[in-house]
Length: 205
Ligand SMILES: CCCCCCCCCCCC(=O)SCCNC(=O)CCNC(=O)[C@H](O)C(C)(C)COP(=O)(O)OP(=O)(O)OC[C@H]1O[C@@H](n2cnc3c(N)ncnc32)[C@H](O)[C@@H]1OP(=O)(O)O
Image 1 (tube, rainbow, N blue to C red):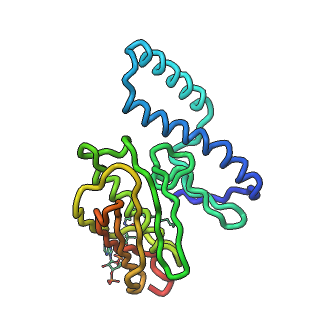
Image 2 (image 1 turned 30 degrees about the horizontal axis):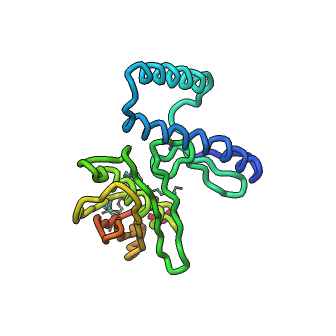
């Protein structure tokens, strides 16, 4: 697994956020526009050439493989390629996860046309992505945990649009943490989730 240390201070981190965040937002918007556009064929071809040229510019200097997870000297994590939260990943919704002192973790996110499965509804795999990441973050609030088993019950279709997901730890069993959660729209729960998240063995195991 690719964990590296990035020797930068908060100011530099903020500078990079301000640089890459708007680029990612623009690409995300491009994805949405590509799905929904109804412009003329000539314009489509012109835009394609522009996008290909822009991609070639970004490709001029690239890292190998995925972005990995980097940590600053202050211990702040930079998971900018992550499919759920990545600041540099236009595929990520992106999720912003918050928590309270009582252990509730939640995220409010709007999923648009790029996340469609059945017409007008969120793709089931995207619901799983949201719940996996939220439940995994909840499980990892004390120490890192990886998804062992994720069980979802799709109670009804999840409409595209604004959604809220919540999670909390149900119980800890040694290095297993069981987390439960829900995904909801304005009318209530659409998906129930339970996950078993597993930490690395302790040195005595
Ligand atoms: C810094 C970053 C964080 C930052 C936080 C970021 C949050 C990220 C959220 C996203 C999380 C992900 O997507 S993670 C990516 C998806 N997940 C993965 O790739 C994990 C792939 N699987 C594995 O690496 C492994 O199978 C593990 C780690 C899950 C388990 O391997 P292991 O450690 O060898 O486990 P093992 O000794 O056999 O078993 C330990 C105990 O767990 C149980 N167990 C084992 N596997 C499973 C399983 N799949 N489902 C249920 N239970 C299981 C066993 O019965 C046993 O229970 P008992 O006998 O003790 O009762």
